[in-house]
Amino acid sequence: MTRHPFRLNWLLLTVQNKGYHLQAPKFRSRDEGSLYARLLQKKTDYLATHRQKEKTLLVVKTFTFLSIAAIGYSGIFFVNGFPPLLLSYVCFGGGLVLLGINIGHDAAHDCVTGNRKTDQRLFRLIFGIQGLNGYLWEIRHNHSHHPFPNMPGYDCDLETSVLFCL
Image 1 (cartoon, rainbow, N blue to C red):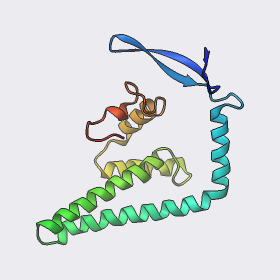
Image 2: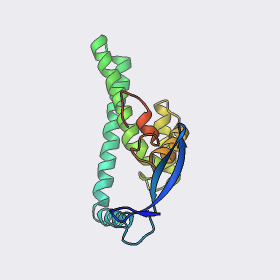
Image 3: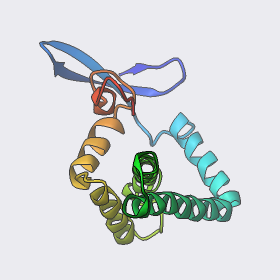
């Protein structure tokens, strides 16, 4: 075990990747005074003072994104001409993407309603509406992205597409 200059205790985990060994850093989160402990305390303090504001913002975002998607979806059936139809498709798709990235992702982490079962149902519903498999996304996201965020070769979200970087 080595010491990181910022006093994080790093455990080096040797990983076989493409014929050579890469070492992926991990730190112990239970050390008192560690970066993790300080960040956890800051988050707890922030939420204690801003929880109601955050809940209100979440409701407003959900209603806005659902409205954009619903207006786009209804426009697909009721508009005449190509430009309004194209705008309807863009609104519908954009609303669903915003809903998935914001509300679906938070629900996947059980952060929307405070009830794990309700959040999981909401997450699966939102991802299902988009034609995505929530179960596979959850496994990929929680077992690749969260342990190794933004680390090339480990974070699968970086390798999704050349056009998009999640």
